[in-house]
Amino acid sequence: MLSYFFGGSNGSSAKSKDLPKKAIVELREQINLLSKKQSHLQTQIVNQENEARTFLSKNNKNMAKNSLKKKKIYEAQSAKLDGQIDLLEQQLFSIESANLNLETMRAMKQGAKAMKTMHNGLDIDKVDETMDEIREQVELGEEISDAISRPMYTGVNEVDEDELDEELDMLAQESVPVKETKATEQMNLPNVPDDKIKSTSREELSKEAEDEEDEDERALRELQMEMGLQ
Image (tube, rainbow, N blue to C red):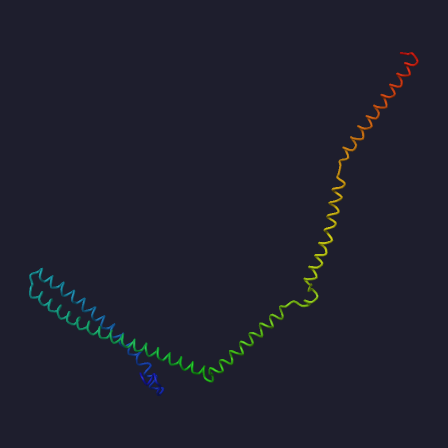
């Protein structure tokens, strides 16, 4: 087993590899065989006990004793088989565990060999150098991405914020006098409804007409008095 793990001839390695499997198979077969034999003995023990009861029911004590003796022999053989089966099962468990450990170590050895092959020609300096190159390329890629994403012809659309503020202030100053002039005009010339103007003029005309009629009547009466018509 050790020669298999640490190396050796191909023939001895193959035999060492197959030996645990062969032993496990043989042990399992033997355990199954003994278990069948023990099952047969248990059946015989039950049969002999039943026969002893039958002979006793017939008052045949000698035959009953013989049946009990056979029962004792079968019980002794069954106890021996129990011990053998226990030993075989313990041995089987030990071999399976040892074989499992061996296969585990073999897999670990193959893994170590593979890692050694992969790391062959590599050292920490080369790894650091490679990582630095990768970082440089990543940074370069980000710079290229930023350059591509920037809008083109930005100078055409650029506007001077200070110039906009100055123009806005000028517009604000121009709009102030206009508002004040309109307010003054509104204060000096209030709006008067047309219907009021019309009604006022009509009243004045009617009053003037009445005054004219009164004067005519007075003049007419004075003339009649002079003529003696009244």
